[in-house]
Structures are given as structure tokens and as C-alpha cells.
Amino acid sequence: MGAKLDRLVAKADEAGTEATVDYRRSIDHIKDKHAVVQTKLNAYKAANGQNGTISGVALRIAWHDLADAFKALKQ
Image 1 (cartoon, rainbow, N blue to C red):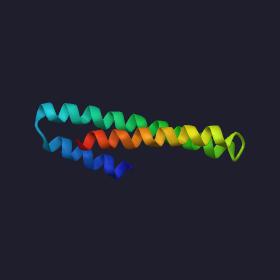
Image 2: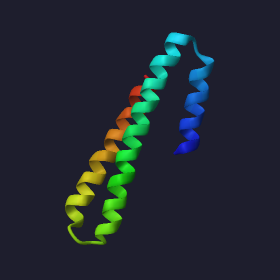
Image 3: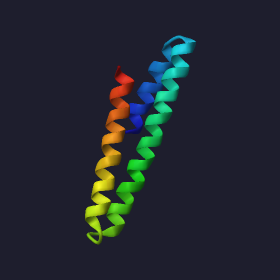
Image 4: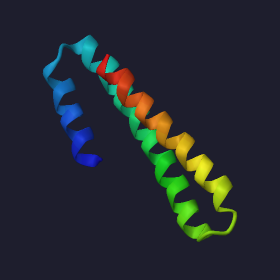
């Protein structure tokens, strides 16, 4: 995931100043979503099957939010 975000940052640096600011905001948004997914994944792993349904649902929601953030960036 980090390498893909690094490529996006490099792409933002190649763009104009205004586009760079907007692109960086989008990348920061993606990084925030990624952190949420990582937290949910760690909680899911820590639950080790206990209360796994709730943790699994939360993880899937966070994952879809991250995917949506990437889709928005591509538009």
C-alpha cells in the first residue's frame, strides 16, 4: 500500500500547484482510511474468532471506504 501512495505523491508533485494541493488532500484522506483499515484489521486479528462477526463487518466497511477513496482520487 505504501508504494502505491508514494507513486501518487510523486504524481501530485508533477502536477501544478493547485492540483497538487487538492491531490495531496485526497492522498491524506486515503492515508487516513488506510489507518482505519489497519486498526480494524488488527482488532479483528486480536479477537481471534471472538466477536468476529462484528469485527469482520467493521473491517469490510472500512475496506470499502478505502476503496471508495481510491476511486474518488482517480476521477
